[in-house]
Image (cartoon, rainbow, N blue to C red; front, side, top):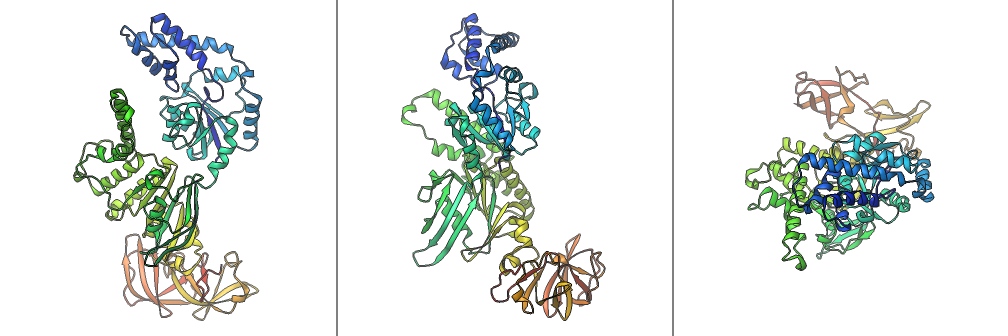
Amino acid sequence: MIKGIIFDLDGVLISTDTLHYQAWKKIADAEGIPFDETINNQLRGVSRMASLEIILRKAKKQYTQEEKEALAEQKNQYYVDSLKTLNPEMVSAEIRELLAKFKADGYKLAIGSSSKNTQAILQAIDLVSPFDAIIDGTMIERTKPDPEVFLKGAATLGLEPRECLVIEDAASGVKAAKAGGFIAVGIGDAAKNKLTDYPIQSLLEIPEVIQKAQAPAMVITHLKKIYPNGFEAIRDFSLEINRDEFVVFVGPSGCGKSTILRMIAGLEDVTDGSVVLNGEDVTDKDSKDRNMAMVFQNYALYPHRTVAGNISFPLDVTKRTPIKHFFDIKWRKARKQQIKEAVQLAAERVGLGDLLDQKPENLSGGQRQRVALARALVRDPKVFLLDEPLSNLDAKMRVQMRSEITRLHDKLNTIFIYVTHDQVEAMTMGTKIVILKDGDIQQVGSPQEVFINPVNLFVAGFIGTPQMNFFDAVINKDAKGHWAELGGKRIDLPAERLKAFPDEMLGKEVTMGIRPKAISVEGDLAFKKQGYEAKIDLFEQLGEETLVYAKFLEKDIIISTSGLGRFTKGQDIGISFDVTNVCLFDKETENSLL
């Protein structure tokens, strides 16, 4: 959901390029340094001191730091003096109306500019009032492409980066926006930048961008896979995925989750259906043309390459030197530097900044998996596909890498599709879980939704550790409300939970599901005497939690309780049920009745 818009000022809401050019021209002319539009174009989005360094490349003398600072200050004075020529008429009525409409529609607006003259410019053009926050060069320590100015803007608005558009005209600004996890909208030169999420020619296109950004980024429709031998692996898979979702495909072995992932990646032919990414049908495109990156279970690292070499491999392959630049040493050096910077950034994001010179044989399993993640990351893909990437790691490392991948997703603000058979991974990592069985979707929902409200018996038994307990019960209703007859005794059921229970199922036997943590044993604070007893078969002490395996009504049940050392095999214990989140299923269809 888009809740805020952060605008760069110069080049977006108003252009003072001519004023900058004139100020720098005065400095260059006074120092006898050549200066023209070609050089001026290199200064867009660059700090004042960095701009001066570019200009001084053509100087005939060396300048001390003190002299450079004096020249930069003189340029700024020329520029500030020229701001007096600005006036409110320089901002069109259409733009003012657009900003007013954004405010009326509830969007929060901010300025995120590295210029220390931002306030003076806004006042000169009478454009202060529309903005809820104004962050300028006097309030930050680092200029673009560092995302500090945008991050401060989002924080001041009380929003997350993923909830904000950043409108930028310079490559450094787009890079800053992406580094901060924002949605980058490029105008002017930035519209051509490869990092830009949505290129526009006019600010009047922003409402359309908002609409696109809030629409599903990936739409998978009626995907089907039938192998030559007639085996139907995937029957009819349809799913919509939003721009910043972490989607987990989970299910038992052979349910088709990896097959679907490979069809999305373009590594498996699609029998029928379509995959649309950002409005473009990529079903028949080669995998290399889909702007997706994949991380595999077995890392797939090149042993003879260093960490840096493995990370840079996608860029080495996809960015081969064009014939026209084959003998262009300057172009080659610039390209090499770009790749080096991209590799360094990707490595730092996954905590490998100090290991770039190491070979894979010298890394731990977790570090090797981070290399695989960085190799995917360096391509700046629109979609990350992860096929059971943690299954080769030990238990402690899996827990650590789960949190690291989740944090990486939060930073990148892009689609992650993760395949696993481990429902703990699914519950802890995903924002949307897709539960599969035999090539069919069983349920799609948030972790909480599929845990509390499973749509059928399979989902109820598959999601949750330990798995749900199931009992045969008869549901009745009287003046007090719904109640379950279980083991010849009455258990009153919550009215809110049973509000959708069909009347035609009253008096009939159903399957009642209760989570292990919803069963209390005598001695627990939550225990309420209901007249039920169970016999302990065995128990597992896991520290603060004890799993009790017992017999109840001739069925095996699992109880999750706190405490240590108070159970013995064969012991009879009193138990009670918390039915706040009870589940009820049809005996024939196995579908939920709630």
